[in-house]
Length: 307
Image 1 (cartoon, helix red, strand yellow):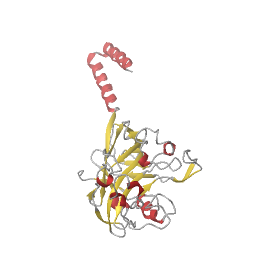
Image 2 (cartoon, one colour):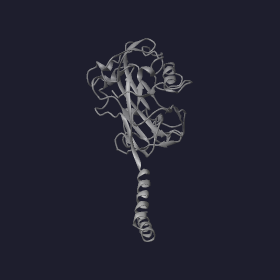
Image 3 (spheres, one colour):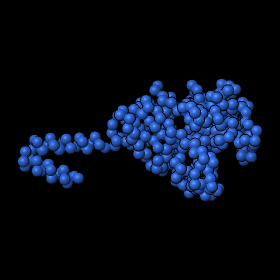
Image 4 (cartoon, one colour):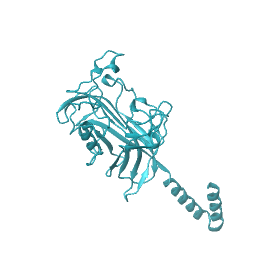
């Protein structure tokens, strides 16, 4: 391409003179620069009501029982991140392949820091998605909460990061936990928080966990991927007023749990909500995250300065 441009400019120099050729060359250079990709960073904040999410922080007035909760984990997988132009067209974000938080079309967001009650987590956090898009103006954001099916049912022990994080994996049949939110509540305290080191995983009470992922995946086995899942439980989120230059995505745990009873667990069901379609404890959570008949209310656009 460069040699072609050089020949064209030399030809114009001979036929039209140096001034015209220079004008032509500058026009091509500007067009080439305008077509180069622009870097983009999409920031995410986690809050509980009006307060920032933090390990060890206690939050009040949560759910239908106005419970107090102490979060112990918050991590999630996003995929299919795209920005929207003013004319409504969608442009995929080419994610930076950082070999840690982002791989192929998938990004892991991590808001726990391994301190206090989040001791089963890691010190490192990740609160933004980085990539590139064609130069232009963008005024909307779409993404999917979840891992694509073709990457959701593999061997986490040999997968590249971040899909090698076993804390975010169930089994091959079910795949990954798209969203992991763990907490101790007034009615369902997480006894692991006070258990001696080395005994915590043997405690039965685990608070009210919310683990969103695919269910009803068959046939499959514990070491073989399924052919399909009855309940994929991936959520496509659209935020049409999002400006990546100034805005951020806010995830509100209080909004997610607004209509849930986090102080009780239905007998003979898994703790909290483990994405089982017939678990009554999942109904309100599913509705709030967009897996029911209502629009999701977990993700919103934050316009004020970042906390």
